[in-house]
Structure formats: structure tokens, C-alpha cells
Length: 194
Image 1 (cartoon, rainbow, N blue to C red):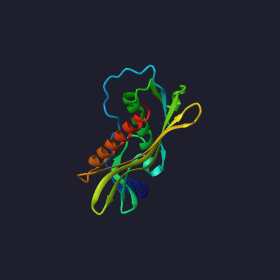
Image 2: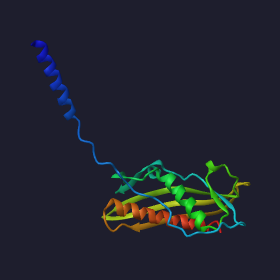
Image 3: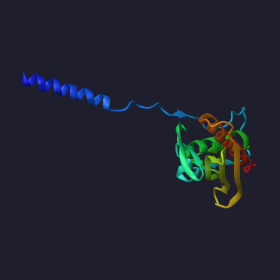
Image 4: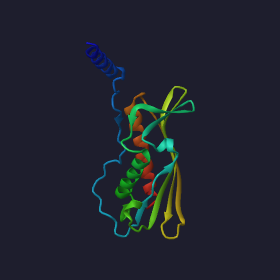
């Protein structure tokens, strides 16, 4: 009898433990960060082979979370993420834009191990949503640089600072505004290669 009571008490305690843990939250929403759809373009046989380097900058801006800066304090948009790190997605967006718009013979990553004529680099200072005085805006600031792949000479540079007001305080609006800014900056960078 004592043994049966102990087994029942242990079973009741074990079943109670299962309900102690909170229910899992909803999975985060993933927002794309992709280049604008491009029409079919023939590679320019006389154009350069462009190496699109890794995007550098602050880890907070280039991680998988969407940054929301409010009155100087950095936070992340709860329940929203990029499908990869922002740095990797921005590099892929620039790569696709260079292929579509620059007149390059080819655009490659360093992992492709293909000799390139020039390298396009991005150093990002800000990729975030900023809220100041009740106004919400998307902000992208970076330095783009084109470097001769053989001599390492700097061929072109451009400081790009873009801002767009976000009309509604929603995750989707914030992510869409950041994507538009990234597309604009990629197009400006591709123009440096012409």
C-alpha cells in the first residue's frame, strides 16, 4: 500500500512538472531582404568581373534581428527577423544588383574563388529603424568602395546615407522600408562600376 501511494505521488509530481513550463511563443516572422526582380540581361563580355566582398560594420546592425533605435537606445523588433544575418543578405542583394545593373561580365563572391578585376565593398554604419520624437524612419548609412583587385588601388568611393519615413508602426512596414533603402543603395553602388 505504501509503495502504491509512493508511485502515485511520484506520478502526480511528474505530471505537475509538465505544466510548470510556459507554452512556447509564436515563431518569429521572417522578412525577406532581396534585390528587385531584374529582367534578363546579357553579360557584357568587355565588362569587369566584380568581386562583391563581405559586408562589414557593427554586429548589431548586421545580425539576424531587425534593429529599432528609440531615443538612442538600441533594441530589436520583437517577433521579427531576417532569414539570415543582415550582412549576408545585403551582400547577396548587392551581388544580384551588380549582375543585373552594372554592365559587369560577372559578379562573384570570394568563396567562388574566381579571379576578379575589381572588388566592391560595403562598410555599413547604420541599418535600422529609428524613432525620434514620435517619428519613425528607416535608415541606411554606408561607405561603398570599388578597389582594383590586382593593385588594391581605390577606384571609386561613395558615402550613401538614406532615410525613409515609415508610415505605420508595423514589423512589415519597417522591414519593407529597409528593403527599399537597401535596393536603392545597391543600385547606387552598381553605378560606381560603370
